[in-house]
Length: 267
Image (cartoon, rainbow, N blue to C red):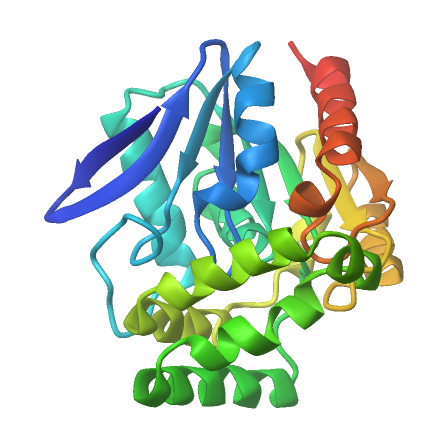
């Protein structure tokens, strides 16, 4: 069920349901908790599922000029506090959600039991990517998000999904169209300025699942496989018929991989 959780002066919209070990789903850019629609009901059977809209996205307020990945991670800890989730969580983040996951692991390791990194990268942006994110931030403030809604899904989804599930692609476009321009700009600048997390990988001492859609053009399979190899307790799962949005494109295969991982690593 959806709840409004107040942290300081900011209201966050959070999906919170089920009971058991806490499972925190953190969405990608520039989306909201509904990208996890194929996981929410599935995992409330056996787990306490928490899926917030990040600051400024979806039904959450509190937009800033820039949202660093560390500030997003801090928001999440405060949301967990308000929900009285004291047990360490399994953190499942996609793309930008994975960047936030690295910060969560670095700053709040005592609150983390397992890490699931979906279609994400450990390295910081190249100069070109940095400049592109800054350009997106400037453009969205002047024009609104329509240009992103048009262009981004072509990169997010596998070619097969673009052809076979146009309604899913259009749903994603609609989410982007409705997203606050300031929130998009703030997150884009936050991603551009995020730290390189490759040095953290070898120090992750918790069970970790690295998941990648086989047709991911943003966080390619070979790169994610290499990232998994650098994490001591990591498993790697390829999701067929999926690109950068694996949990949304092929929820059955993603859910099977996640449930196997959770079952093997449940205490």
